[in-house]
Length: 493
Image (cartoon, rainbow, N blue to C red):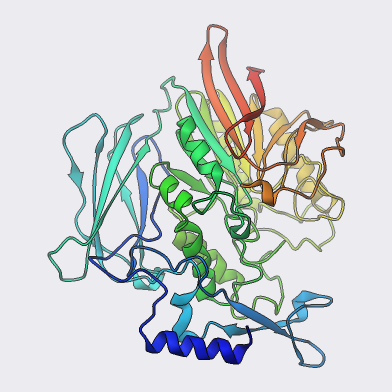
């Protein structure tokens, strides 16, 4: 559709009061659902966003229309030829007053929430005070529940109201499980995914099949290793960046999953800013949207405390380390050597210290990008690439010195188990969220490191359990429908 006709239709829709969303009834609403995260044995963060309408703008509504200014001639072009970092985007659509019309858009609204919560086996509800969402943070709030009981399933109910009102607007129910205490022997299982591209949805109702499959397994929690969404082509300002979160977490499968399963979120390049990015990366391609804004929006849109690298204990047998791979990295283009880093000195020191203090039976390091690989020769952004060989060797050697420590990684669009030839470090790549997003490798490219290889979508589960023979760690790859594709059982080293 040409721009003149598009603007004419937009003007007509606006003049008729068309919002692109379901009309407001009692509110405020929860069109983007809730997220529960950073769960410990006695705490949890509940993320809430209030919206004007109960449903997002529907499928078939307009999408952003971005064209580009050619760097030399200044000519406006629809397709880029050459180095995209030199091209300046021009937003043809939406204009300032039409963002709510975009497919998947939800308009935030001011209001208050109250959270009711209780162990599932209890009849007594606790509740918070009324607290207000923050208009400066996309009408979100992150509320930390404290003094929780360990190893319990909690039910929660969140109610909303407009500012100054006594009337309850809407309620939403959810649940999560707290971690067992560090000295408690308990089976623990969590799921891991990566590469969730909106254009590669595979669930008929909207969203991704993996979420229903993971819920059927009854996992204790979920880890998203990054590339939660893909900013690159359509997020040219903060509004469009937040729209990516709105359309992703109003999808039916995502909405349902995240109110029932707690999560730990990691960001990678595409949900920070742009492919293979780092602090100080220069490009015109992202328009008015900056790396620093991407960092801030991530902290705004997921339940998280003050650091993006952290460790969590789940009972006597399981501890996970969640790594940050974008905020502290050197440019990919720097020559390799002792000063070139992905994790940065402070994060590495923290990792070494916290691992040394841990007495968990199994230690799981969750990385947004590969540490073992192998990866494609044209990639330069992770520890399995030559570009970060010096620090990659250090990290692999450190992991190899630990007892019962394994790597789980995201980013790669295929599943694998690899074992490093030199150190013996074993890495499990979870694979992307849908088959449509799988690729970048082929099943006939099996390398000596590969213990398992499958170019497919799906997810990984990590389970600690005990038998008469002692503690076991079971790593299982699944298809998008929840079929086991490969399972690897590990005993104590």
